[in-house]
Image (cartoon, rainbow, N blue to C red; front, side, top):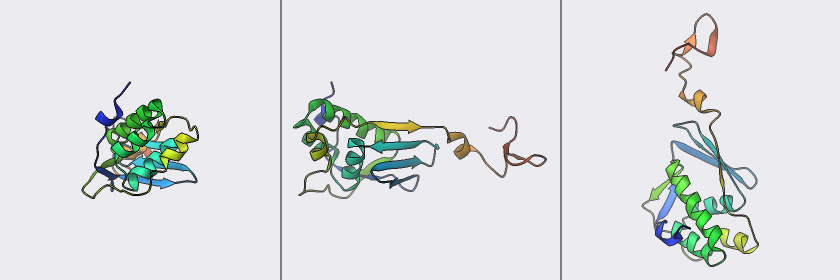
Length: 150
């Protein structure tokens, strides 16, 4: 079991733009790392943790709040936050962390939400790595990649 307070920062995080873009599609965050073509889905409690991070709550405040409800959920949130940073979707921010209202992830955990999970998809990574001008075959046309390209 992870020690959530030892694995999380007390500082603020932000979207790692411009190489990461994210949007909320009715309760599901879809984030894309434009550098490697991976995209990510965050639903349920993972969606709420993302929203809390982007709103300025520190990872430590989120994980500590969740630990007061359920240690397993807090551990999963600490892993989620580490994965978000490892996948270069978020980065530390120089801005002060939010304070005041509780994080939106806490009431979800109190209502029995499942631990947060990040889904990773890499089926479009080849498209992001391709060069549609230099990798195209003049005889076949774009977007067919040339044999031996990269």
